[in-house]
Amino acid sequence: MILVVGAGPTGLSMAIELARRGVPFRIVDKATARSDKSRALAVQGRSLELMRPWGVADELVAAGMRVYETEWYVEKKPSAMFELGDLGIDDTPYPHLLFASQADTERLCEAAVERLGARVERGVELVNAIDRGGHVDVTLRHGDRLEEARVAWVVGCDGAHSVVRHAAALPFEGAAYEQDFVLADLRIAWDLPERLYFFLGKGQSAVVFPLRDGYKRIIAMGGARPADAADEPSLDEVRALLANVCPHAFTLGDVRWKARFRLHHRGVSRYRAGRLFVAGDAAHIHSPAGGQGMNTGDRKS
Image 1 (cartoon, rainbow, N blue to C red):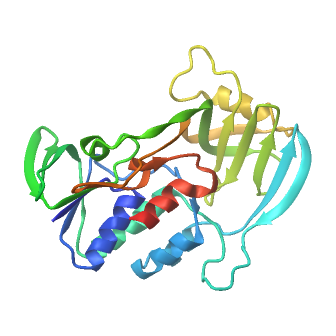
Image 2: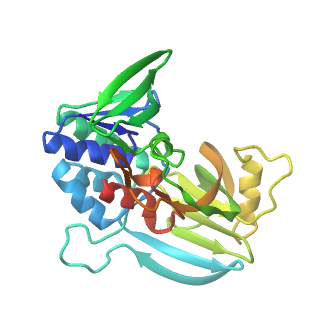
Image 3: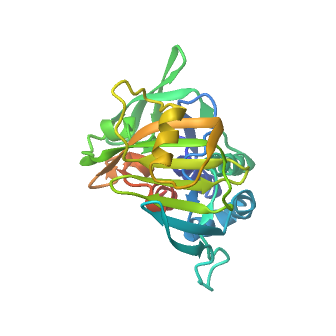
């Protein structure tokens, strides 16, 4: 029996491949419900190729966006425009970068797990894992009840604060980037075409992604963080960060999600310690540019 810890894209990918090969496993996640937040958006062509046998790729393509016109501004002046879509590769059915909500990715991958006769055990948290050499003793928390179990292997797909990585005593070396970032999924009213916008200023920047359902994602950095700033930025702070670099009038509203975050570049030197493995964000975290996090996690599972 293999225990997969974490039901994000990496853990679900691991579960699907184990189920396809008839390998006994359990997959647990401490969250009681799947997240509805969009989070990681970029899905690369190779990831879609790997998802195709699962019956996931084409549904995900239908749920996402394949082609964006991108427009770049530097210090509030138009600078460049080009299309981000077909990569000109002719040996794949997915010659493009797909923009799709991570909520859709996880929804479709979990459905694939269930089609294969398995399920995610939600509200189940790994407390500890002890490698005994021939097996691993694990403690799982189900609300106010503890379960002691014995498994052959543990795969930690449990994120940047991985319990499995700590149990394996794997160093997570690296550092944080200096900048604070804010993120918001909301609606923007402005007189601009539906495009992917990059607004670059001196020490400041903002990116506006169009999402399929009419919402936009803003990721911005560079403003002075308010002294009393909470973990979640205010709408006024998001508005000010965008206005600092965007030359166009706009209004913001109908907020679905806001967050403040720091980016890190950290990684383990190896993915295995005895019978404990780490994958995805449990093994490496870095800038989200290019969709590295989710895509590399899926492939290494």
